[in-house]
Image 1: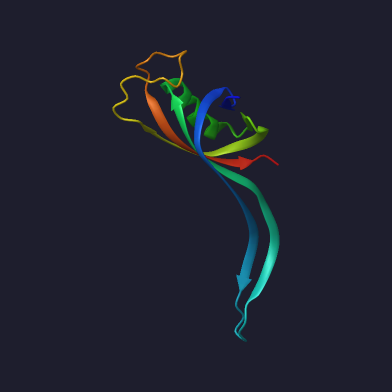
Image 2: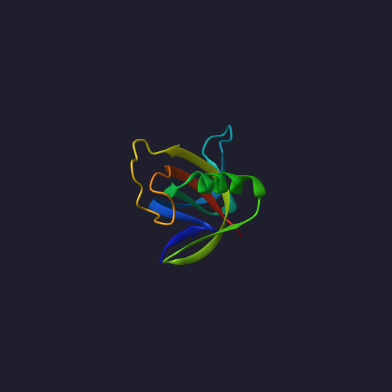
Length: 120
């Protein structure tokens, strides 16, 4: 099954998940540390992906401005995330892209890092 971020076809190279606890460490004058646990944050996922074409690059960039959840779908199911950050760079010296046969062979290929926050 293919991977998609909403309607954008993506080719993941790496996927990292993180979970954070929300804690504060207090150091009173009398010594010792006191740790307060204020809860946790939802899952965060960092993707390193390939995409093809400037239209998909623009679509990913626009996902950071809407504030609405997008669906990450792939062979392991689908989950909703908010797009926190997108960093894109064009792959140099690509003479003929073969990732997407529905696009022109000379379409630009991008390596993109996407930071996703789980939509609770």
